[in-house]
Amino acid sequence: MAFDAFRGEFGSRMDSKARVSIPAAFRRILDQGAATAEPGRTRLVLIYGDPRRKFVAGYSLAGAERLADQIRALPLGSPARRALERHMVVQSVTVEIDDDGRIVLPPPVRAKIGLSGEDGLSEVVFTGALDYFELWKRAVYDSEMAALDQLDAGLLGEGEDILSLLGRAGQAAGA
Image (tube, rainbow, N blue to C red):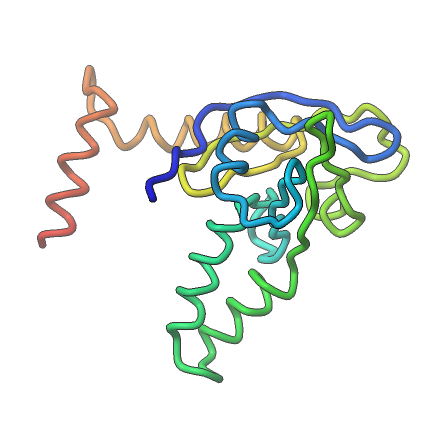
């Protein structure tokens, strides 16, 4: 079964009860990848591991299972498998989308992206990353995107279109 991809960026606010609204476009994809026995209660997995990441990754249940399958394929006890299990499985949580399209952000998820309990109405951003989405604190996202824009500018020659990078990626893979 083919799944739609998570695409775009959507702002939201965390309310005083730590709830955020999942963008409607993302809810549709999460519903598609749901494997829940209770109709109308879509669940998703939020991964807050890896201290180098400044965002939380959100997966449909099907997407989280595909990721788990990749981890299971690694040799049991290998350093790579242990690291992935710790950062992608142990440091994750399954949450339910309520009838209003919201989820409650658990304390470890809020801590990961820098939202404190006193942040009532904090701004967050949901960004699509094809197989998963990212959840950022708005100020951190804006800062990171500005820095990445500077780095990306160095990849392109004068007047060169961003799509020219696709050809380079194919050349690098074939090298």
